[in-house]
Amino acid sequence: MKYAIFLAGLAAVFLLAFLVSNDRKKIKYKPILIMLVLQFIFTYLLLNTTVGLTVIKGISALFEKLLGYAADGVNFVFGGLANEASMPFFLNVLLPIVFISVLIGIAQHFKILPFIIKYIGLGLSKVNGLGKLESYNAVASAVFGQSEVFISVKKLLGHLPKHRLYTLCTSAMSTVSASILGAYMTMIDPKYVITALVLNLFGGFIIANIINPYEVKDDEDIIEIEEEKQTFFEMLGEYIMDGFKVAVIVGAMLLGFVALISMINDVFNMAFGMTFQTMLGYVFAPIAFLVGIPWAEAVSAGTIMATKLVSNEFVAMMDLGKVSEGMSERTIGIVSVFLVSFANFSSIGIITGAVKGLHEEQGNAVARFGLKLLYGATLVSILSAAIAGLFL
Image 1 (cartoon, rainbow, N blue to C red):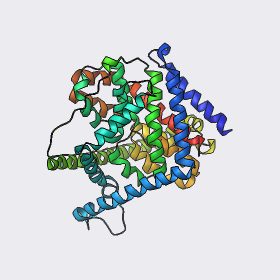
Image 2: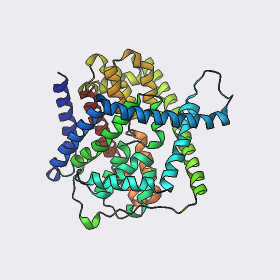
Image 3: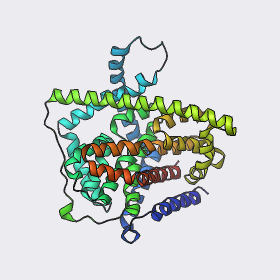
Image 4: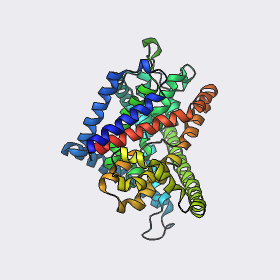
């Protein structure tokens, strides 16, 4: 039964992508099949083998240590502000982003990250049927984030045709930045965070190959990575401030979204006898069922999935923590994988703003295909959740 549901879910994702394809005749099925097989292999290794669990435990232990160092800084500045034994979300989950951002800056300054990103991107371009720039951008998005990544290729933005720009934006929205991985790992099991990162990387290429197929000529496929010359301490200052800005922005968005959802839930409860999130849960229940969640848990899981789409992944992860005791471990795993991406309505504005700040015309182009961008990135999340469900 599990395999039949997975095949139905996989067929549904591919059909939904196929229906909005820009050019169905140009879809390259071989790269799609190769990447699907790679997703199966990596998911099995990460979730069901000793090697995979060792890797995940190692990464988890590393981030746990890094968060411990970050806590030293937070406690020095804010020690005594919080009540004893309490766990303020902003201090313990968001502020450590500052320290992780600093580490990314150091790796960038000493040319470690550019080397890794460039050559992983080149390797991926051999199997994904897309260009070197698209492959580079997908890996870079998983490090820098959905808005910052465009700075690294800003010289190329004005020369990119709209179809290539769509693929770059899909990668940016389908992944998550390394600076907030630690924050996610305090809210959901690290093994699901790592698994989702790998699945979304390949899933973004798969969906882009269906929705937005095209050929890239060799003379068009040039990667120019924008690098600013800074001293070490200039870089430290910049990344510290960038990390703090991200923490404050996420905190502000959480404050606004949680308050707004609370108000809307109250209004819907008075008008219809059910909350807005519960209503969304019924809408998303079939999707939850198709990714492998038992029907008995489909509405509650669908509510969390819908919450992520209309607000953001942090709000959804907080809600998952509140209801997880009533869910099976398999359902928690599938939903957790679905949540690890930037695919939500607010990301349309974030990416549009980032591109528009670098190139006005291209930013307007992103705004025009914004809904289709979110549609594709959401299909990536559904595909990742379905594959995770197959191995849980």
